Image (tube, rainbow, N blue to C red; front, side):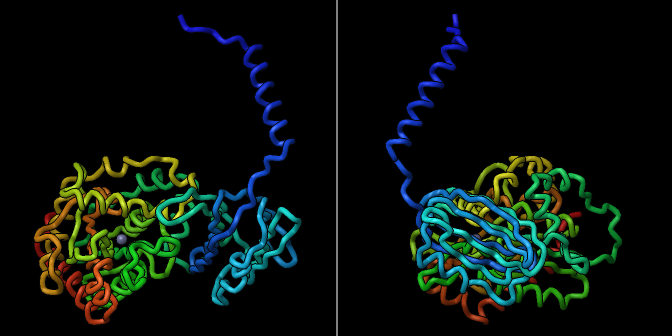
Length: 410
Ligand SMILES: [Zn+2]
Protein backbone atom coordinates (compact mmCIF):
# COMPACT_ATOMS: atom_id res chain seq x y z
CA UNK A 1 0.00 0.00 0.00
CA UNK A 2 1.36 3.46 -0.82
CA UNK A 3 2.24 5.54 2.16
CA UNK A 4 0.17 8.68 2.53
CA UNK A 5 1.81 11.89 3.49
CA UNK A 6 -0.17 14.08 5.84
CA UNK A 7 -0.52 17.72 4.71
CA UNK A 8 0.36 19.03 8.16
CA UNK A 9 3.58 17.06 8.18
CA UNK A 10 4.42 18.46 4.74
CA UNK A 11 3.84 22.03 5.93
CA UNK A 12 6.03 21.39 8.94
CA UNK A 13 8.87 20.13 6.74
CA UNK A 14 8.49 23.12 4.43
CA UNK A 15 8.73 25.37 7.47
CA UNK A 16 11.91 23.70 8.64
CA UNK A 17 13.49 24.04 5.19
CA UNK A 18 12.51 27.71 5.00
CA UNK A 19 14.03 28.43 8.41
CA UNK A 20 17.23 26.68 7.41
CA UNK A 21 17.47 28.73 4.21
CA UNK A 22 16.83 31.93 6.15
CA UNK A 23 19.53 31.22 8.66
CA UNK A 24 22.00 30.30 5.89
CA UNK A 25 21.49 33.62 4.16
CA UNK A 26 21.71 35.47 7.49
CA UNK A 27 25.09 33.92 8.15
CA UNK A 28 26.01 35.62 4.89
CA UNK A 29 26.71 32.97 2.27
CA UNK A 30 26.51 35.66 -0.36
CA UNK A 31 26.77 34.54 -3.98
CA UNK A 32 30.12 35.49 -5.56
CA UNK A 33 29.97 38.55 -7.79
CA UNK A 34 29.38 37.84 -11.46
CA UNK A 35 32.05 38.67 -14.05
CA UNK A 36 31.38 39.75 -17.62
CA UNK A 37 33.82 37.90 -19.87
CA UNK A 38 32.72 39.22 -23.28
CA UNK A 39 30.26 41.65 -24.86
CA UNK A 40 29.04 41.60 -28.44
CA UNK A 41 26.64 43.75 -30.46
CA UNK A 42 25.15 42.35 -33.70
CA UNK A 43 23.28 45.02 -35.65
CA UNK A 44 21.13 44.04 -38.64
CA UNK A 45 18.23 45.51 -40.55
CA UNK A 46 15.81 42.98 -38.98
CA UNK A 47 16.90 43.16 -35.35
CA UNK A 48 19.91 44.06 -33.23
CA UNK A 49 21.25 41.66 -30.64
CA UNK A 50 23.38 42.51 -27.61
CA UNK A 51 25.08 39.59 -25.88
CA UNK A 52 26.68 39.75 -22.44
CA UNK A 53 28.70 36.64 -21.66
CA UNK A 54 29.41 35.93 -18.01
CA UNK A 55 30.83 33.32 -15.67
CA UNK A 56 27.43 32.78 -13.99
CA UNK A 57 23.78 33.21 -14.93
CA UNK A 58 22.82 36.90 -14.61
CA UNK A 59 19.60 38.19 -13.10
CA UNK A 60 18.22 41.46 -14.37
CA UNK A 61 15.35 43.92 -14.36
CA UNK A 62 14.19 45.98 -17.31
CA UNK A 63 12.71 49.51 -17.30
CA UNK A 64 11.53 51.74 -20.13
CA UNK A 65 12.38 55.44 -19.86
CA UNK A 66 11.27 58.23 -22.17
CA UNK A 67 12.59 61.62 -23.31
CA UNK A 68 14.77 60.39 -24.88
CA UNK A 69 13.54 56.81 -25.43
CA UNK A 70 15.73 54.43 -23.47
CA UNK A 71 15.78 50.96 -21.99
CA UNK A 72 17.52 50.50 -18.66
CA UNK A 73 18.63 47.03 -17.70
CA UNK A 74 19.77 46.60 -14.12
CA UNK A 75 21.94 43.57 -13.52
CA UNK A 76 22.30 42.28 -9.98
CA UNK A 77 25.44 41.20 -8.27
CA UNK A 78 27.76 42.68 -10.86
CA UNK A 79 30.76 45.00 -10.87
CA UNK A 80 31.57 47.22 -13.79
CA UNK A 81 34.74 45.76 -15.34
CA UNK A 82 36.84 46.90 -18.36
CA UNK A 83 35.25 44.25 -20.61
CA UNK A 84 31.75 45.52 -19.92
CA UNK A 85 32.88 49.12 -20.45
CA UNK A 86 33.85 48.31 -24.07
CA UNK A 87 30.17 47.91 -24.94
CA UNK A 88 29.77 51.65 -25.65
CA UNK A 89 32.38 51.50 -28.42
CA UNK A 90 30.70 48.49 -30.02
CA UNK A 91 27.63 50.39 -31.19
CA UNK A 92 27.89 51.18 -34.90
CA UNK A 93 26.47 54.40 -36.33
CA UNK A 94 24.59 52.31 -38.92
CA UNK A 95 22.74 50.39 -36.17
CA UNK A 96 19.04 50.91 -37.02
CA UNK A 97 17.86 50.63 -33.41
CA UNK A 98 20.59 51.74 -30.99
CA UNK A 99 21.88 55.27 -30.70
CA UNK A 100 24.24 54.62 -27.81
CA UNK A 101 24.88 52.37 -24.82
CA UNK A 102 26.22 53.54 -21.48
CA UNK A 103 27.08 51.46 -18.44
CA UNK A 104 27.31 52.63 -14.86
CA UNK A 105 27.65 51.18 -11.37
CA UNK A 106 24.29 52.07 -9.90
CA UNK A 107 25.05 50.86 -6.41
CA UNK A 108 27.79 48.58 -5.06
CA UNK A 109 25.97 45.50 -6.34
CA UNK A 110 24.09 46.68 -9.41
CA UNK A 111 25.23 47.66 -12.87
CA UNK A 112 22.88 49.62 -15.11
CA UNK A 113 23.02 49.29 -18.88
CA UNK A 114 21.36 52.25 -20.52
CA UNK A 115 20.40 51.78 -24.16
CA UNK A 116 19.38 54.93 -25.98
CA UNK A 117 17.15 54.14 -28.95
CA UNK A 118 16.73 55.47 -32.48
CA UNK A 119 13.19 54.13 -32.84
CA UNK A 120 10.48 52.34 -30.87
CA UNK A 121 11.56 48.80 -30.16
CA UNK A 122 10.20 45.65 -28.64
CA UNK A 123 12.93 44.06 -26.57
CA UNK A 124 13.15 40.31 -26.08
CA UNK A 125 15.52 39.56 -23.20
CA UNK A 126 16.53 36.06 -22.16
CA UNK A 127 19.39 34.04 -20.76
CA UNK A 128 21.17 31.10 -22.33
CA UNK A 129 22.95 28.27 -20.54
CA UNK A 130 26.57 27.50 -21.49
CA UNK A 131 27.03 25.60 -24.77
CA UNK A 132 30.11 24.74 -26.87
CA UNK A 133 32.73 27.46 -26.16
CA UNK A 134 30.17 29.88 -24.76
CA UNK A 135 29.59 30.55 -21.06
CA UNK A 136 26.33 31.88 -19.60
CA UNK A 137 24.79 34.58 -21.75
CA UNK A 138 22.28 37.37 -21.28
CA UNK A 139 20.77 38.23 -24.66
CA UNK A 140 18.95 41.47 -25.46
CA UNK A 141 17.21 41.39 -28.84
CA UNK A 142 15.71 44.66 -30.07
CA UNK A 143 13.00 44.34 -32.71
CA UNK A 144 11.21 47.28 -34.34
CA UNK A 145 7.76 47.95 -32.83
CA UNK A 146 6.40 48.82 -36.25
CA UNK A 147 7.78 46.82 -39.16
CA UNK A 148 9.01 48.82 -42.10
CA UNK A 149 5.99 48.85 -44.44
CA UNK A 150 8.13 48.87 -47.59
CA UNK A 151 9.72 45.62 -46.47
CA UNK A 152 8.43 42.55 -48.33
CA UNK A 153 10.87 40.18 -46.61
CA UNK A 154 8.79 37.95 -44.30
CA UNK A 155 11.72 37.39 -41.90
CA UNK A 156 10.61 39.77 -39.15
CA UNK A 157 7.07 38.36 -39.09
CA UNK A 158 8.43 34.81 -38.98
CA UNK A 159 10.77 35.65 -36.11
CA UNK A 160 7.79 37.11 -34.22
CA UNK A 161 5.80 33.92 -34.73
CA UNK A 162 8.81 31.86 -33.73
CA UNK A 163 9.18 33.84 -30.47
CA UNK A 164 5.53 33.22 -29.63
CA UNK A 165 5.81 29.54 -30.49
CA UNK A 166 3.26 29.94 -33.31
CA UNK A 167 5.56 29.22 -36.20
CA UNK A 168 4.62 25.58 -36.71
CA UNK A 169 0.90 26.32 -36.65
CA UNK A 170 1.27 29.00 -39.31
CA UNK A 171 3.63 26.85 -41.35
CA UNK A 172 1.18 23.95 -41.47
CA UNK A 173 -1.24 26.26 -43.25
CA UNK A 174 1.13 27.09 -46.10
CA UNK A 175 0.23 25.18 -49.21
CA UNK A 176 2.45 24.97 -52.25
CA UNK A 177 0.44 26.11 -55.25
CA UNK A 178 -0.46 22.92 -57.12
CA UNK A 179 -1.41 24.69 -60.32
CA UNK A 180 1.89 26.44 -60.88
CA UNK A 181 1.94 27.97 -64.34
CA UNK A 182 4.10 26.19 -66.87
CA UNK A 183 6.44 29.11 -67.39
CA UNK A 184 6.49 30.26 -63.79
CA UNK A 185 10.04 30.91 -62.59
CA UNK A 186 11.80 28.36 -60.38
CA UNK A 187 12.24 29.89 -56.93
CA UNK A 188 15.58 29.11 -55.30
CA UNK A 189 16.31 29.86 -51.62
CA UNK A 190 19.99 30.12 -50.79
CA UNK A 191 20.81 29.60 -47.13
CA UNK A 192 24.25 30.74 -45.94
CA UNK A 193 24.74 28.79 -42.69
CA UNK A 194 25.23 30.32 -39.22
CA UNK A 195 25.60 34.10 -38.72
CA UNK A 196 25.65 36.70 -35.94
CA UNK A 197 26.30 35.12 -32.55
CA UNK A 198 26.88 31.74 -34.23
CA UNK A 199 30.22 31.85 -36.11
CA UNK A 200 30.01 28.26 -37.39
CA UNK A 201 33.35 26.47 -37.70
CA UNK A 202 36.54 28.46 -37.25
CA UNK A 203 39.69 27.73 -39.24
CA UNK A 204 43.30 27.57 -38.04
CA UNK A 205 43.82 31.15 -39.24
CA UNK A 206 40.57 32.22 -37.54
CA UNK A 207 38.52 32.32 -40.76
CA UNK A 208 34.87 32.11 -39.76
CA UNK A 209 32.50 29.81 -41.61
CA UNK A 210 29.65 32.34 -41.35
CA UNK A 211 31.62 34.95 -43.36
CA UNK A 212 32.87 32.59 -46.08
CA UNK A 213 29.47 31.00 -46.71
CA UNK A 214 27.80 34.42 -46.93
CA UNK A 215 30.34 35.47 -49.57
CA UNK A 216 29.75 32.26 -51.56
CA UNK A 217 25.97 32.62 -51.27
CA UNK A 218 26.15 36.22 -52.54
CA UNK A 219 28.19 35.11 -55.55
CA UNK A 220 25.72 32.30 -56.24
CA UNK A 221 22.86 34.77 -55.88
CA UNK A 222 24.42 37.09 -58.48
CA UNK A 223 24.84 34.22 -60.94
CA UNK A 224 21.30 32.94 -60.45
CA UNK A 225 19.90 36.45 -60.89
CA UNK A 226 21.09 36.35 -64.48
CA UNK A 227 19.00 33.26 -65.24
CA UNK A 228 15.67 34.30 -66.77
CA UNK A 229 13.83 31.21 -65.52
CA UNK A 230 15.05 31.51 -61.90
CA UNK A 231 13.99 33.74 -59.04
CA UNK A 232 16.41 33.72 -56.14
CA UNK A 233 16.21 34.69 -52.44
CA UNK A 234 18.55 34.38 -49.47
CA UNK A 235 17.64 33.39 -45.91
CA UNK A 236 20.17 35.99 -44.73
CA UNK A 237 22.26 38.61 -46.50
CA UNK A 238 23.77 40.07 -43.34
CA UNK A 239 25.78 38.90 -40.36
CA UNK A 240 22.62 37.97 -38.46
CA UNK A 241 21.58 34.92 -36.46
CA UNK A 242 18.42 33.21 -37.75
CA UNK A 243 17.05 30.06 -36.06
CA UNK A 244 17.04 26.94 -38.23
CA UNK A 245 13.26 26.62 -38.29
CA UNK A 246 12.86 30.24 -39.35
CA UNK A 247 15.16 29.61 -42.33
CA UNK A 248 12.92 26.77 -43.47
CA UNK A 249 9.80 28.86 -42.75
CA UNK A 250 11.10 31.72 -44.90
CA UNK A 251 11.63 29.34 -47.82
CA UNK A 252 8.09 28.00 -47.45
CA UNK A 253 6.53 31.46 -47.10
CA UNK A 254 8.14 32.53 -50.37
CA UNK A 255 7.05 29.26 -52.03
CA UNK A 256 10.61 28.21 -52.80
CA UNK A 257 11.05 25.26 -55.18
CA UNK A 258 14.59 24.49 -54.04
CA UNK A 259 16.51 25.08 -50.80
CA UNK A 260 20.29 25.11 -50.78
CA UNK A 261 22.14 25.49 -47.51
CA UNK A 262 25.81 26.48 -47.86
CA UNK A 263 28.42 25.52 -45.24
CA UNK A 264 32.14 24.87 -44.72
CA UNK A 265 32.91 21.71 -42.83
CA UNK A 266 35.15 21.16 -39.82
CA UNK A 267 36.66 18.07 -38.27
CA UNK A 268 38.92 17.34 -35.33
CA UNK A 269 41.67 16.14 -37.65
CA UNK A 270 43.11 18.93 -39.82
CA UNK A 271 44.09 16.34 -42.46
CA UNK A 272 40.46 15.71 -43.48
CA UNK A 273 39.42 17.61 -46.61
CA UNK A 274 37.11 17.65 -49.63
CA UNK A 275 33.65 18.81 -50.62
CA UNK A 276 30.43 16.96 -49.85
CA UNK A 277 26.71 17.34 -50.42
CA UNK A 278 23.99 16.13 -48.06
CA UNK A 279 20.31 15.51 -48.44
CA UNK A 280 17.77 14.80 -45.71
CA UNK A 281 17.38 11.34 -44.31
CA UNK A 282 14.36 10.43 -42.22
CA UNK A 283 15.96 7.14 -41.15
CA UNK A 284 19.30 8.25 -39.79
CA UNK A 285 22.64 9.26 -41.13
CA UNK A 286 24.50 7.45 -43.91
CA UNK A 287 27.74 7.47 -41.90
CA UNK A 288 28.85 8.26 -38.37
CA UNK A 289 30.63 11.37 -39.64
CA UNK A 290 27.37 12.50 -41.25
CA UNK A 291 25.49 11.92 -38.02
CA UNK A 292 28.14 13.83 -36.05
CA UNK A 293 27.92 16.70 -38.52
CA UNK A 294 24.12 16.85 -38.37
CA UNK A 295 24.25 16.88 -34.59
CA UNK A 296 26.78 19.73 -34.45
CA UNK A 297 24.95 21.73 -37.14
CA UNK A 298 21.62 21.25 -35.40
CA UNK A 299 23.26 22.77 -32.30
CA UNK A 300 23.34 26.11 -34.12
CA UNK A 301 20.18 27.26 -32.36
CA UNK A 302 21.71 26.80 -28.91
CA UNK A 303 24.92 28.52 -30.02
CA UNK A 304 23.20 31.35 -31.88
CA UNK A 305 20.71 31.57 -29.03
CA UNK A 306 16.95 31.31 -29.09
CA UNK A 307 14.67 32.07 -26.19
CA UNK A 308 12.91 29.03 -24.86
CA UNK A 309 9.44 30.05 -26.01
CA UNK A 310 10.55 29.47 -29.58
CA UNK A 311 10.98 25.80 -28.84
CA UNK A 312 7.51 25.32 -27.37
CA UNK A 313 6.66 22.84 -30.07
CA UNK A 314 9.30 20.16 -30.21
CA UNK A 315 8.79 19.74 -33.85
CA UNK A 316 8.48 16.56 -35.66
CA UNK A 317 5.33 17.71 -37.36
CA UNK A 318 7.16 19.13 -40.30
CA UNK A 319 9.32 16.06 -40.65
CA UNK A 320 6.29 13.79 -40.46
CA UNK A 321 4.94 15.49 -43.52
CA UNK A 322 8.03 14.91 -45.62
CA UNK A 323 6.94 13.48 -48.91
CA UNK A 324 8.72 10.85 -50.93
CA UNK A 325 9.00 13.00 -54.07
CA UNK A 326 10.58 15.83 -52.09
CA UNK A 327 13.16 13.45 -50.68
CA UNK A 328 14.01 11.82 -54.00
CA UNK A 329 14.20 15.20 -55.74
CA UNK A 330 16.53 16.30 -52.93
CA UNK A 331 18.82 13.38 -53.80
CA UNK A 332 18.66 14.26 -57.51
CA UNK A 333 19.49 17.91 -56.81
CA UNK A 334 22.33 16.99 -54.44
CA UNK A 335 23.82 14.51 -56.89
CA UNK A 336 23.70 17.08 -59.69
CA UNK A 337 25.55 19.64 -57.54
CA UNK A 338 28.06 17.04 -56.32
CA UNK A 339 28.84 16.05 -59.93
CA UNK A 340 29.64 19.67 -60.71
CA UNK A 341 31.71 20.04 -57.51
CA UNK A 342 34.00 17.27 -58.85
CA UNK A 343 35.45 19.77 -61.29
CA UNK A 344 36.18 22.27 -58.50
CA UNK A 345 37.55 20.33 -55.54
CA UNK A 346 38.43 16.84 -54.41
CA UNK A 347 35.29 15.13 -53.10
CA UNK A 348 35.19 14.06 -49.48
CA UNK A 349 32.80 11.22 -50.39
CA UNK A 350 32.11 10.06 -53.97
CA UNK A 351 28.32 10.12 -53.59
CA UNK A 352 25.69 12.18 -51.82
CA UNK A 353 25.42 11.64 -48.06
CA UNK A 354 22.29 11.63 -45.94
CA UNK A 355 21.62 12.97 -42.45
CA UNK A 356 18.89 14.53 -40.34
CA UNK A 357 19.74 18.21 -40.66
CA UNK A 358 17.05 20.43 -39.13
CA UNK A 359 17.56 22.97 -41.88
CA UNK A 360 16.60 20.45 -44.57
CA UNK A 361 13.25 19.55 -43.07
CA UNK A 362 10.84 21.42 -45.33
CA UNK A 363 8.09 18.98 -46.25
CA UNK A 364 7.63 20.15 -49.79
CA UNK A 365 10.94 21.66 -50.91
CA UNK A 366 13.80 19.52 -52.23
CA UNK A 367 16.65 20.64 -49.95
CA UNK A 368 20.37 20.02 -49.87
CA UNK A 369 23.30 21.09 -47.76
CA UNK A 370 26.57 21.80 -49.57
CA UNK A 371 29.75 21.49 -47.51
CA UNK A 372 31.97 23.53 -49.83
CA UNK A 373 35.28 22.41 -48.24
CA UNK A 374 36.84 21.81 -44.81
CA UNK A 375 37.62 25.11 -43.13
CA UNK A 376 39.52 23.08 -40.50
CA UNK A 377 42.02 21.96 -43.15
CA UNK A 378 44.73 24.62 -43.55
CA UNK A 379 44.94 24.30 -47.34
CA UNK A 380 41.19 24.38 -47.83
CA UNK A 381 40.78 27.28 -45.40
CA UNK A 382 43.16 29.25 -47.60
CA UNK A 383 41.24 28.22 -50.73
CA UNK A 384 37.85 29.12 -49.23
CA UNK A 385 39.03 32.69 -48.79
CA UNK A 386 39.95 33.18 -52.46
CA UNK A 387 37.61 34.86 -54.95
CA UNK A 388 38.43 32.27 -57.62
CA UNK A 389 37.48 29.27 -55.46
CA UNK A 390 34.33 31.02 -54.23
CA UNK A 391 33.35 31.76 -57.85
CA UNK A 392 34.03 28.17 -58.90
CA UNK A 393 31.88 26.78 -56.08
CA UNK A 394 29.08 29.22 -56.95
CA UNK A 395 29.20 28.22 -60.59
CA UNK A 396 29.14 24.51 -59.65
CA UNK A 397 26.00 25.10 -57.54
CA UNK A 398 24.31 27.03 -60.37
CA UNK A 399 25.23 24.45 -63.02
CA UNK A 400 24.08 21.68 -60.68
CA UNK A 401 20.70 23.41 -60.28
CA UNK A 402 20.36 23.68 -64.07
CA UNK A 403 21.27 19.98 -64.55
CA UNK A 404 18.72 19.04 -61.91
CA UNK A 405 15.92 21.07 -63.50
CA UNK A 406 16.29 18.95 -66.65
CA UNK A 407 16.04 15.70 -64.69
CA UNK A 408 13.63 16.29 -61.80
CA UNK A 409 10.45 14.33 -61.18
CA UNK A 410 7.30 16.34 -60.61
ZN1 LIG B 1 28.05 24.88 -40.90
